[in-house]
Image 1: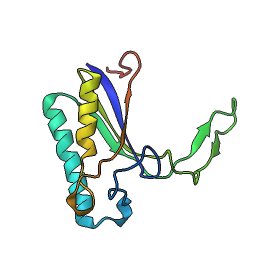
Image 2: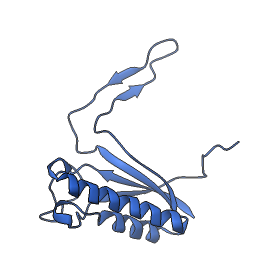
Image 3: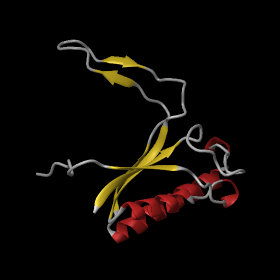
Image 4: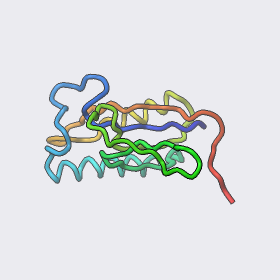
Length: 138
C-alpha cells in the first residue's frame, strides 16, 4: 500500500475545465453545495469500507507564509496573497495498492456533482508521499 494526497484546487488554476463546468462554488445553490459535499462524504465512506481512507479536510482560501527568522526573533510572515491560481481548497489522503488505483479514486472524486447536479469534472492533483510513514504512535 502507498499513500497519496488528492488535492482539490480552487477553479482559478490547473488544466482547462470541461466547458459548462467552470461555475465557481460561490455561485451554486445551497442544494447543489449540499449534494456536492454529500457525494464527497459517501466517497470517503466507500474508501473507509475498502480500507483505503486515511483522512481529509477542507481549507480556508486564506493563508500566510511563515518563516523562521533566527533565535529569539518572531516568525516572519507574509501574505495572504491575492494570486489565487495555486490555492488548495481541500485534501484527502488515501492508502491504495497502486498509482493506477490512486488515479481511479481521484477520477471518481472528480465526478462530484456541481451546478444542476451534473459532474464538475474537477481536476485533482494526485501526489504520492515519499518514504516511510511519519506517523508517531505511542
